[in-house]
Length: 330
Image (cartoon, rainbow, N blue to C red; front, side, top):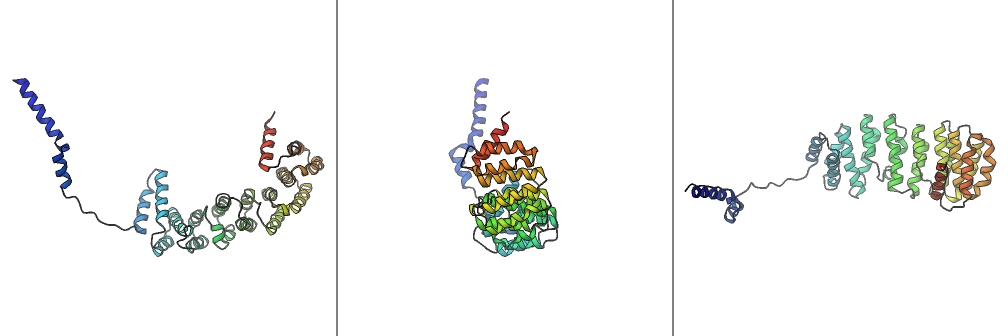
């Protein structure tokens, strides 16, 4: 009797547990009226509020996601509201988010003038932190060409942080946007490097610049920097001249050879040797042999260059790789 009663109790409990899963119960739940859905339009203020809250998160991935959401939504957001929000924003991080959204509008063909509004604030903003943040929003975009030479002005900014952000922008734009093969962008980079009053900025731009498509005028500007008072600028100029177009090689070779004879900084001379090798390939061997006695400390460096160039390799990257290999051999 006790066993029967216990069995019935367990059966009843099982039925109660499974009842929500039975077809009848499921139908009843589906049929129950739910809350009415309310339509909501995407707004600049709403997105900015979400971003401000999201910035409190410790997740960098989530913060990046928020920036991406705003940038992706920029094309559909009201242009006037977006610009107004950017112009009144004083927090550097938020200003960078809004600036990036405006730049995205230009990059996607929605508003050619949006990127110029960002460049204008980068020039006129009083707070150097906001200026630097605004400059960062222009990175890896067409700003080098589409902002009417704004970088030539910003490389002379009073803030070292702003100047360095501009230099980084130029280097990354040339490498990742133009792949070093777009003459107008490369020439604009040279103009900015020459216009800079900060030797670190000039050296950073020229030391990372692919000069294979620059104009004769730009080559001449770089040559003028071979006599700069700062050794790092001279070194960067020497490296940049090594990659100039074929029709400008003769002039560049004469410049670097002349400087090598007068130069006293070993680091600059080492860069000049690389430039001489790049400008002449196997044809540079006689010139390197004549230079060997001028700087005994660099005789091993010259000997290595002569060994590599004598292999008559036809690609500069192969020459560099072989030189590195030889220097690693005991």
